Amino acid sequence: MAAASPFPSPSPLSMSDYELNRCLFNALIDQNTNEVIQLCQIAPDGPLHITGIHKDTVLHLACYSKQKDLSIKLVRLLPNNLNRRLTKFKNDVGNTLLHETATSNEMRDVATLLLAKDPKLLSAKNAQGETPLFRAARFGKIRLFKLLANEVDKDNDEERRKDQFHSEDKTSILHIAIIAEHFDLAMLIVEMYPELIGMEDGNGMTALQHLACNPSAFAGTTEYGLCKKLIYYCIPDKKRTMEEDCDTKRNKDTKRYVKWLLNLLMWKELKREKYKHTSAWELAKELIKKDTSWEATENTALNEGKKSDQEITDGSSGLFLSGLLLKTERERLCITSKNLDEKQGQSRYEQMPKTTMTGIRRDETPLFLATSWRIKKLVEEILKNYPQAVEHVNKKGRNILHIAIQYRHLEIFEMVQGNDMLSRRLLRATDAKGNSLLHMVGKNRKGPKIET
Image (cartoon, rainbow, N blue to C red; front, side, top):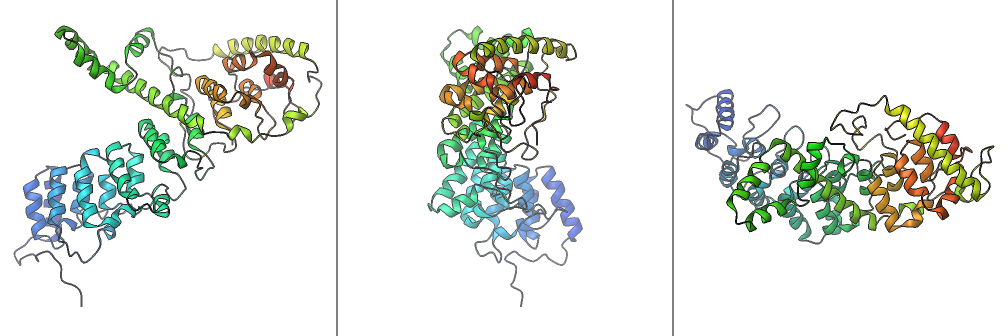
């Protein structure tokens, strides 16, 4: 015999399901809290009445549309003796009620009430294998992430934590925060869960590898016009700096001027850009400290690859090659640059595809990825922390100078070969196919897309 519903049954004079759903949907769209509550009181399943065609309940839709007050009232309408756990109420994409609250920091009170009703919601996964914690990381909701993370950490269950931190394809909360460019949250995750730094996703990519494939995350990779450049350098590095600056100024005219600047569309756009650059750089420095992937190197560095006619045999000719390479490369870059669009504010990487979780070469180190994507600042920081990393050789037998020439990144080539001791050894090297650096100059320029 079926269990009785905890909600009052509709009266004989009640409306049909289609009419009820229409009224509920319209009330939700109009954000008419009182009408939604009244309709839920006559609905067979109350706030858990399925209203949408994608199996969304009334409470799903209220949480999804970020109607905080309505959501709180609907949760409080739920009886304590529900016949089914709240984890069983999922829409077509497998999202529970807690998944829907995870996309907004303003829904923290709702999340707290839901967890009090059913703590199992915390570990429920949607169709993509994502927990509410993972979803909060994907959307960059720091305050809600902290709330859910504290709940996960309460029982100190290592297996439970591990399960919470990854989706079905082994992407971690740190990976997804970096891919979605929520660098402040990624930094928080690094501080809370440092064990995630070296973990690989389903494509064998670490957090730093993903970051090294995103040139737009770093300052200096986008060319601005004069006006934008001036505004960019006037913007403080941290979000709080401008607010603190305004509070300390006594001159009202200065405050009004600063407020007017903050409301400029261009200022807002560049402010977001600079904050992104600042937070990405802080994150990169922290990740680099823990990365030693360059230690896994090929022995072709010692054998200098296969012999070739153009192989360099002594230090003096190495210096000659350096000059010849630089001259040849400049000529090729000059010819290539004529075909490039030099519009003001255009990114150098406009043609580069954004980093995704597939299609990226898995076996390159962050040092070589940063070189390939022309992130000079990141290359400098890696070599500053680990100068010996400059001798790393990939599976094709290529060192950092091979990669710099292969992708026509002359500024990185000049930076590395500036050290006489290092340049002699690197300039003499040939790859596994016997290609010297001069061979690399002669080859067609590699496109910005990373090889697979």
